[in-house]
Amino acid sequence: MLEPGFHRPHLHGVETLYPPERAPAATLADAMVDADFVLIDDEVYEADYLRVPDEYTVADDVVIEASRGDTEIALTRAEIDGAQHLGEGVFRLRNGAQLRFLASATIH
Image (cartoon, rainbow, N blue to C red; front, side, top):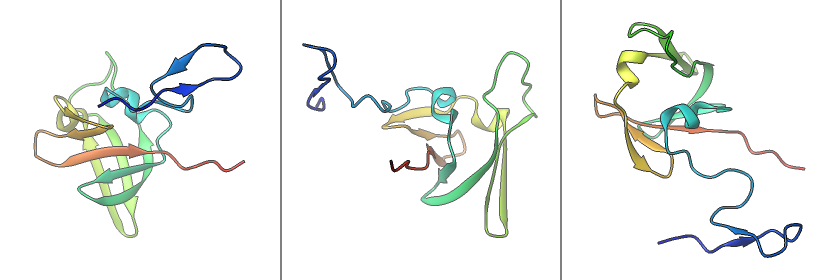
């Protein structure tokens, strides 16, 4: 089911499926951009380091470092490669863990 369209008053007759802030990411790389937190299996971690994999990233390079209290997690490119997009910005890693990147809300 599609979300109802949002009208942009400054662009007459233009509607989009999502508000102009940001649509849900369809790729892991898109989801990582500007993320402040990582939700891993229903636990929120602060994103300490994120590197979007590129052609220079090898399998054992750490691409995600996150912490929650005294707990620290590091994921390599090999661990996130092949992640399955489940929808709404949620991804399932090959080891079965579910992963979602979150950004802090900005209040004006």
